[in-house]
Image 1 (cartoon, one colour):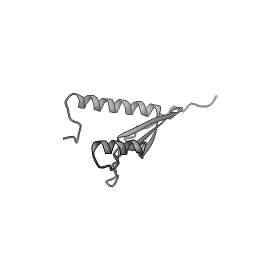
Image 2 (cartoon, rainbow, N blue to C red):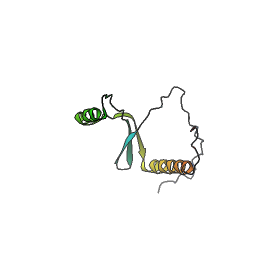
Image 3 (cartoon, rainbow, N blue to C red):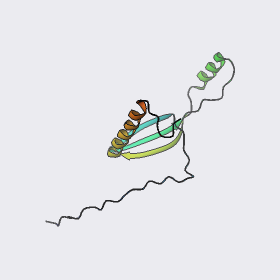
Image 4 (cartoon, rainbow, N blue to C red):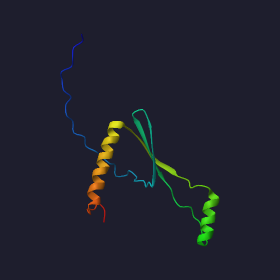
Length: 107
């Protein structure tokens, strides 16, 4: 039998760093797909097209377009375990803010 490694991994602090020049992108649509235990989170921005005229003319122009383009602004791949952690983190923030408290940075 082979030897078992009895050493424990050293705890290392993770210090998140966000570069000052990192661009924040807006997303108002997303898609979640998976292959095995890898989850693909695709974030899109859908901007309303520039249409003018009366309400009826605008509605007709939108119908003629057939669909709105959705620009993918970011795609993140996470494991099932990390997706569960993300779900819990988002759920916690939503619970805090739905209790009448404002999220950090919210006015």
